[in-house]
Image 1 (cartoon, rainbow, N blue to C red):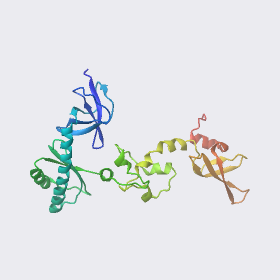
Image 2: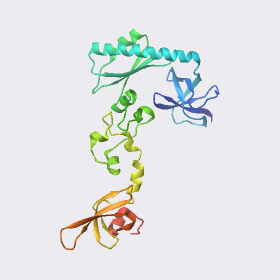
Image 3: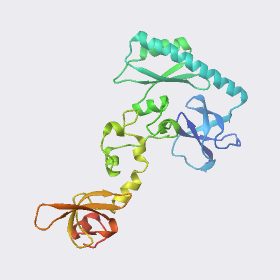
Image 4: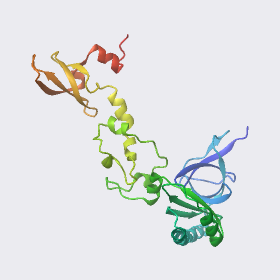
Length: 283
């Protein structure tokens, strides 16, 4: 089986594999020219070289390291990108297309122009693309973005005061759900839990696994437990970080209760609760 010397590259926030066909001395952070899907692109090396017998995903080819001449070409491409953006936005208005242009990007060799846009529904770009391709003398490919992808390109400052994580370092968007907020005992105020993209914040994912594991050791809200003095109580809240449990304890035969907070190791689970919590008790 043929072995290939493979490195991981980053291109527009996506990781791809490429073969070091010329045995170049590559280091993490190096800028290289690679042949990707029929055109030349500038990408960044993000992994050490490794030998792979049968890669699971498509493998592209590294042509060379970026030279001083290439850097000048890249600067020229950036200027061309701005020119193309201006022309495309004007044409979008002329065609009255219900789409918002977010970004445009030439490939390194300018054989193709990617146009990134958002739209609420299907948009017929065929006449528009034909005119733009003729005017700019290159192939044009329209790529629709979701709200999170748009925010990643545009960027911004989060409520934490730092640059948005999606712009700064996130390469792959994880699925975020309200359940993650519930597990982390956050107030379910959706506007406050949402980012600039109006989707649930990516940071809800960061500590979810920790809270999920910590909550396995805690009783459920409403569960019956026993306090250190043997009184039966009802769990009304828990704190996974402090490992504390707040309970309501009935006062005699009255309907009145008192509220107390105990460390997790001070309370005892009822037999039924032990089974529900799966604490290793045999059936």
